[in-house]
Image: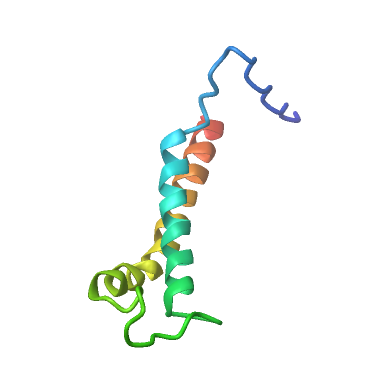
Length: 90
């Protein structure tokens, strides 16, 4: 027996599958990776020169965190997919 697709929520009704908090997590994950590439850690990044605004210890520490943004994004996506799969499995 074929399954039917769920109908979207009505305009005044809140969708149960949408989590706004995950959008915030995904934004920070994207920003961490973007900031890292923008500053000096990958690709065609800005080269670190003495006296530039991004050549401070604080900015370099933030840029070093960018690799964790990929992990954060993937974990949030797995959370979404697992929740969706479990909801449809029942």
